Structure formats: structure tokens, C-alpha cells
Image (tube, rainbow, N blue to C red):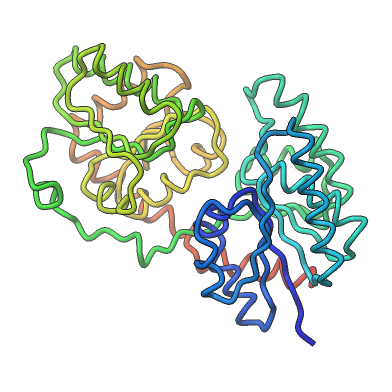
Length: 369
């Protein structure tokens, strides 16, 4: 008799970008694999891989009560139709709802991967008011919790009182794809590149804190430091950031938008920079380290799990553009230091490779099947 597993996330691209090796594992083990999510990409991508798709049009807002009610009813129908051997949920709102419905409508074990709790050291009080009680309640419906950074692991045990909690090194980076082949900057862009290139790969939303990065870049230009700033990504802040660059007359800032060829940009740069206010375990940093790039990052949860200060990169205080400018200037002026940090980073990222992470997840899955 065919067995079924279900993966749930807020949007389909989350599953497509991060979890396909795990869906492939279950298919090879003979399971029928289902996903439930909001479709923000072509359904055929999954259907071509024989994955059953259930559309759950749920917004990310915790206050869209009508939408949440409709999504809950859709999930209930799925659980009534299929007898799942395992349910693996991701992203907070849909994960809470799925666990709440499944505990009454399905007898399957439920695994929850927290890709970064919304309550964390330095988080707004509203985050603690909303998300901490929700996670505390949902632990009663959860067979096991999987976390991806040390702070969340401590909070899961000390604040949420989880018994079955596993610390896993993210979703895994395919080091066969992300390996240094030294793409020349001039060949990639068909032009000469000016000085040290800083590359930021991040959605242009407030959480990614691009404003502080641009303020630091302005300070660097006042100091006469030569270089370029490449911004990859799009989002609600993109127009405002472009206007800021124009108003402040900042030079050598390039907005590349959403790209499919991120690897080529990162590999052609000198430093990966990420100054977010909040992260779980940023894949952009892991991929850049796999390419042998030094990192400049805000000293927050997730970032400091990956970056060893003064060894694989530099950690800077959140919302401190002068300290950020100092770190950028230091790496811009010391190519040998960049090279050494890049080598250490490539060695340090090995435990985060897809193969060992997948093996660890297989053992967790097998424990609850």
C-alpha cells in the first residue's frame, strides 16, 4: 500500500528553493509526496516530478482571519482524503494552522522546522506577544522541532520546553554547484570593475536593512575608498533605495534586481555583505563561503552561527553604519586578508553541505515514521 507524506509551507517557492532534495528522498523510498502551499510559481514544476500539489491560498498575515478559516477548511479536507505517514511543516503562520488542524484530523507525526523564530534577542515586543504564545501552544501538537541556529535551540528547550528538538545545519548547500571557479570580473560584466566589489544578495525589505548599508557606502566614498556595491534582489524597498542613491549622489551602486545567475555575481565579487536585522541561518552567507568569499555581516542570530569574527569574516553591530564602513574599508584595502578569510570560510562551511545535512534529516524522518 502506497504511503503518503506532506510538506507544508507558506509559498511554493520556499519548497522549490530549499526542500526538493528531501522530497526526492521520500520518492526514492517509495512514498507519494504532497505539498500544500500558496502557488507563487508554476504548478507544473512539481507535477512534472510526480508531486501532488494542494493549493492553500493563505497570506502571511496573522490577522487575516477569514483567509485563515478558509485555509483551515482546505487542510481539513486534505487530511480527510489522505492518510499521511508524516507531515513536515515550515514557515510560522501556515505551520501553526496545519498543526492545529492536523492534531484533530490526522494521526500523523508532525515535524516543524523553524527557519528562525520571530521572537529572538532584540526582537520587537509585538513579536514576542504574538509569536511566542503561538509557538508555545503549538508545541503540544508537534512531534519534533527542528531548528537551524544555536539561539533558537536554547529558546526551544528553555522557553518552549520541547523534548524532541534537533539542531540541523540549515537545509544544506550543494557544494558541487557552489564551488570557486574564479570567474574574472571583466569577462562576466564585459567592463572594468572599479576597486573592491561588495555584493549583497537580499530581498529589498525592511528586515534586510539596506539603508544602513547605503549609509556606510556614503561614508566610504567620503573616505575615498574605491569600490563597487552590487545589490541583488527586489522588493518593496527597491524604489525608495534607488531614490536615496540618486538624492545622495552616491556612485558605483548597482541595482541588479532579481537574478537567476546569483552565483556568477557572488563569484565575481570580493566580499559578501549582509546586515539584516533578523535571520535564521542565511543561505546567501553559506553559498558565498562555499565560493571562498569573506563575509561582512550584522552580529545577530544566524549570522554569527556561520561567521567567525576575524577568521571567516567580520561581524558588526546592528544599525551602526560607521562600524560597517570601517569593516568594509578594512577588507577593501587588504586583499591578502580577504583571501585568507575566504579560504577559512570554505573549510568552515563543509558541515553545512547538502550531503551531511540530508543524512541527519533522514535519521530524524526514520525516527518518526
